[in-house]
Length: 393
Image 1 (cartoon, one colour):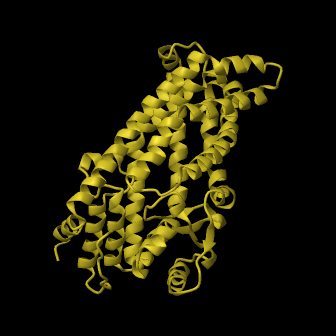
Image 2: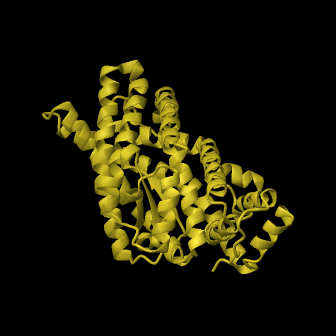
Image 3: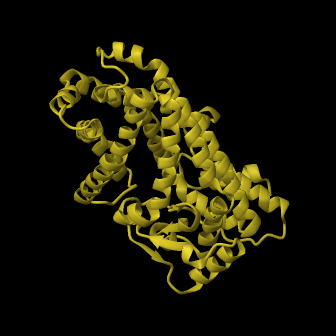
């Protein structure tokens, strides 16, 4: 078996129409990432021209600085979301439904979007209030303290997410008794993961994608498998996918993400510190960095900077995904089942991008690259169990 040829044939077997549709969906998603910056610029410009935040800041002058700051930040978050609503409906619901990636009714989507906005207004509003507190107290070193606050906030959100946030959007239940639970409990026990950390959730409520994930930190971490993956795959495929997620858990990828995102926050805040004044002039405002009325400038700068470092963050995630794939192959040893599961993800992720496209936009290695790696593992380990590679639907 030649892994390169076999991987190419496995992807070709998906069919020309499926590959073209996956390519169109992926390319459109990449363009959307760029258009997001245009939308962010328009929102910042509209809010600055309306002077909405400046008027509120002045109107609430009798309130304490912290209350005024939180109020202005909350209004900004809500106003930005409302201005972006047509765009977000197109990108997050209509387009996903058009490509068959979601079956969620519009009403349920709007309800969950509103709930997400409410949580964002509170959590992000508190975080931004802390940033402006440091802008007033630490002054020239505000960016250093704010990056520390970002790290702390990220850890708190990751700790609380499985307990308080995720259950608001999906139902998480322990895996039911049966062959799947027995097999996954054995895998978890081998990795030192308690059996009560394995869950299934109704991911089909929002997405038809074949997926699973690890969330939370420490004793609150859990491995969750979408019902789409659980009901649309063979037992061996579920074992291979769960082995991948266990790899993320055992290898500490969540903690690595916390460290890297904290360092990126440090870079972004420092860049905002240096670039805010010229950016404000370009947007036609003289609001100082320390004023919440200038928040649209700060948010726009942060969006541009995060977009700029996206290739680096994507590379880091791809490294983690490759490591998790290898962990599954080494511990579960089901390369053909891994291939079958990976081919099911090709419907929403072009399996054969160019090297440049993958480097710039892909948060996971391409499907063909991952399939090739699994087949290479099989070729290098002739004793591995051979399963049946099924064509993705």
